[in-house]
Length: 536
Image 1 (tube, rainbow, N blue to C red):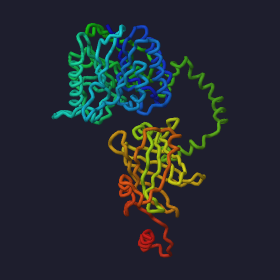
Image 2: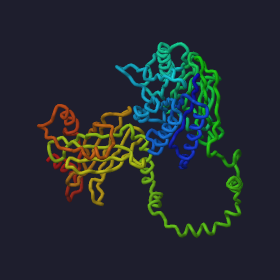
Image 3: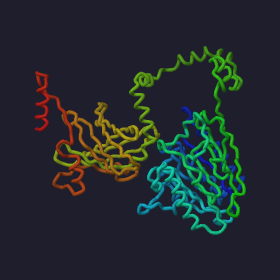
Image 4: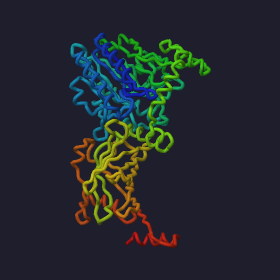
């Protein structure tokens, strides 16, 4: 006999309308740890969306790893099987795997391939009972992105059919490996046909735009239990008792305020699911809409809210208005906030900077840039680093120029297509903006970025030239970055590899420059004179 606990969609690090939910998540994890011990659970399955964003905060990651350490210490035979969801970064989730395996934890985030073929062995996990015997095989499949699943010739939806085919091939592989009496368990993070979602719930959106749901037929009767994640409402799929969404432990939006939260306990014996039981969890903080049903006047809504807050009356609050006003008058105004509120562009920059952090992980690391030297016929090579800032508030970028000066700045990633790296070229308070515009590739974890380097030349004339950034390492260690050096490579010393970058970035027409032309005429002849001067 083996006891399995199925949970999903923790979304650690989520903020709720700006409200920090750390305490709520810790309350759930404490409850879950108690459930594991009380019920003598052998395997904990987490079906995706461990974190709320692909680049989670350090605090969120600590919460996750402390939980793993705690429950594997308190339960010496407990196994954990975790798959990545659409909110998780597959590579980031898998990165500490060698360490986590020492704590009997398997994480499946990436669909690995060998010679272009899917490694199905990597997606198979042996589940052991209390006696240490392999009692079940787990088909642990993460959220599948385009390219992760087999290509199927179909007139229907290629994603849905591709996912179905992957599970079919993985099941065939598992059937060959299992021995008598071993059960088959599947894990997935997907939208199953027939799933129920709240009408106004936008938190359970499908990331790959327009893709259809996956049929429950992808999980045939040989699979005794299918543990799903992605849908936040706990439910059976298409009325099948053994295909379930565990649901999220916390409501992720007001549309989910009436959901019943918890986990699913599954008992397997002699290759079959002999018991499937929902264990209810009551979140630390409940969500309330005021008024609960129909619209009400502001005074009525206020009275209802006050009745729920420690029975504090409206009259008592109004009696304190005078003292509150005095406190407000004593407070110093936040000049910066006023300035930002008055400038929509500054506010937009701040918003884009925070949102960019969620996307930077795909591009984090150290690079060498190749571009034209404006002073000599040389290829300029300069190190760059792109990473999330220490406080996870913005994208931090660093650059070491060919003359050994280090510059720090920030980056903005816009619409998954464009990126802007911005530096102040001078160490003094005087501001000299350098912007590097990069066109982002349409795939994750690119090894090369290309774009335009926008700055001032030595005479403070604007110049734009081609630039290529080639990734050297996924590391974002600052000390390691500062050990790197930039240089100028004369044309005669170019290697065949460097000549490719020179030919792309340093040819005539690959850069644009303008200059100020002193002229009393101030007419079109200035344009002709400027071009002649630039050739010189």
